Amino acid sequence: MKQFLLLLKKEQLENIRNYKIYWIPAIFILLGIVEPTTNYFLPQILESSGSLPEGAVFEMPTPTPEQMLAAIMEQFQTIGIAVLILAYMGTIAGERKSGTATLLYVRPLSFKAYFLSKWTTASVISLVSVWLGFLAGYYYTFLFFGEVALIKVLQLIGIYSVWVLFIMALVLVASAIAPNSGFAAAIAFGTYLIIQLIDGLFGLNWTLSPVKIPQYGVEWLTGSPNSSVWGAIGIAILLTLLLFALGSWTAKRNKAKTKV
Amino acid sequence: MNIVEVENLTKRYGGETAVEELSFILEKATATALIGPNGAGKTTSLSMLANLLSPTSGKIIMKKDISIGFLPQYPQFFPWLTAIEFTELAAKISGVDIKQARLQSIKTLEFVGLENAIHKKVGSFSGGMKQRLGLAQAIVHRPELLLLDEPISALDPTGRREIMNLLKSLQQDTTILYSTHILNDAEEMTDQLLFMRDGRLIEQGSLKDVKKKHAAPYIQIKFGNSTYALEFVSNHTWKCEVKENLVLLPVSETGPTMQDVLYVLSTEKQDIIGVEFQDASLEEIFLKVVANK
Image 1 (spheres, rainbow over the protein chains, first blue to last red):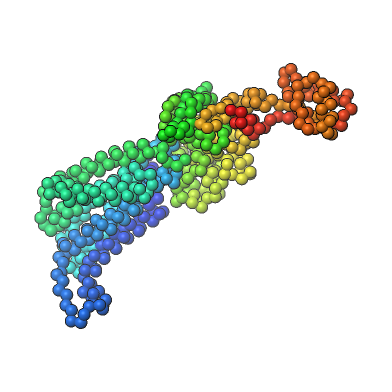
Image 2 (cartoon, each protein chain N blue to C red):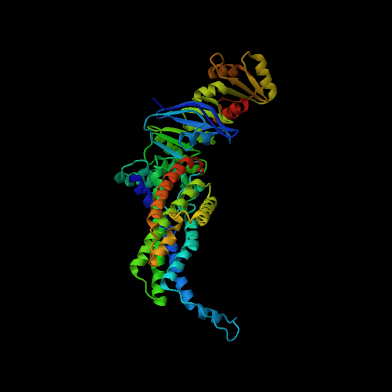
């Protein structure tokens, strides 16, 4: 526990001093704002582009506030996750590649504390970013498209947070496995796509798939919660714990790969 | 008292052997210099002792609960940490009491000459400052065993002298194993020499023993020209070597002493420029050992 707290402080300092603590939430807030704003102003945007023939009329259905929040989550699922992978791909692999890890690895280091301190910091920043992004999106959705009960939005955020924690564990395991940051990103992106693909192929029969958590979050928001949500969350938590074990073990196993 | 016993240590990477059958002992509060050309296996050996690498075979037996300090050849630091933050982190992870860690870190940074850079970020440090900080993190927890990979190679002559003096002061209660290719400095601080080449230990022993074995001291007589030198050799039965106008007489138990030589020369009429006692440098021994094996 002592080492975990020490390393956690080091990770916090790192994320403050390399400005991740500022720019990652900023990106999520931007993603949260852009979706409702562009949707609201889309007719004006198209009109001002000037390339439409005279007399052309567009009839676009106005999305419901719930659909708008779901669209924000879609942005997080694509651009947001990509940002998180790129931001944390070098957390372990980069330290090994540069040799900065060497001076830690030669000490009586607990690799569990090492891995968990990194995951905790990355997860806290990611979660705060996602929450701020959703809240910013919720505010603009409320302004432009109408009200959604705050409790429902918080439930969506809560369910989606489990998915984010799982993804961060996956990114850090990829970083523990890979010889460098680029490779770590490739593993993380690859795994992310593969699990989406598997869910797409076999998901109908496997309702407890953690990949469905974002979808279940939206269903919860629209008032038709799926009973499988708790099972999927349970499996996601279990997989996250397994990833902790795999990450700590791999980080220790690969300590010889650090640059001396 | 033995702090470390290394037995038949071998490290292979696929078909490549980096270290082969390395065996030696490190006694308490002694300094051992690991010497060898590039690619001899010094860094790999130190990395195994520092528990960064696992040996392919062989054993490293260390004193129970021994604390180790390690300085890599090119230490890399988190550039966003200050010197005190990094040293304190190193101390705490090594088990130093949290209350003591700050004080000990400040003292250590002062000890290595970084007192004016304590609160500066490491990213702004010069190569020499990084080397000093590397030493600070290696000794901040007062380790019993200090492993240093080329600790002075990145330093200027003044820095080298300072760090050598620091290391000598640590030697009183720390066992030091260091690799170096600056042999003049190694000569100053060594109780044991380990010569490596191609991953193998090719010679070991104290400086005195190694010198005795490979390059005994000699008396050098410098004559005005080579004819006088050859004449001197033909007039005496001493075992000697002639190099142009120089006569080299090895010092041994059966050979002549300086006193004998001076007495004989006082009776000679040749043109004598000088007489000197010559001791082989570690560099000469190194070249001889590496070339011979």
